[in-house]
Image (cartoon, rainbow, N blue to C red; front, top):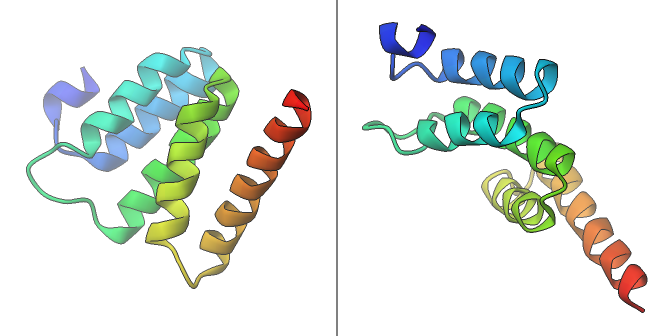
Length: 105
């Protein structure tokens, strides 16, 4: 019902995804809501993209989706290159790749 009243609102999508993902533990549904925000008619602002990207990183991690988690970390690091947030995402991505290699070997 929230989205029906304002389907283009990224703020509504982020809040709804937080509720569904974190409170109800329905990570896949929350991810779908956020991914849909990226396909709306207007591009996301840098602030909106950071909020969506941050939450997607957390949701993919909580869901145990390593590929999705790495994909979002890569995107986030690229879009935020030269910032502290971008460096943290790059570091987390490196740790993720290293720990996956340790588990295989």
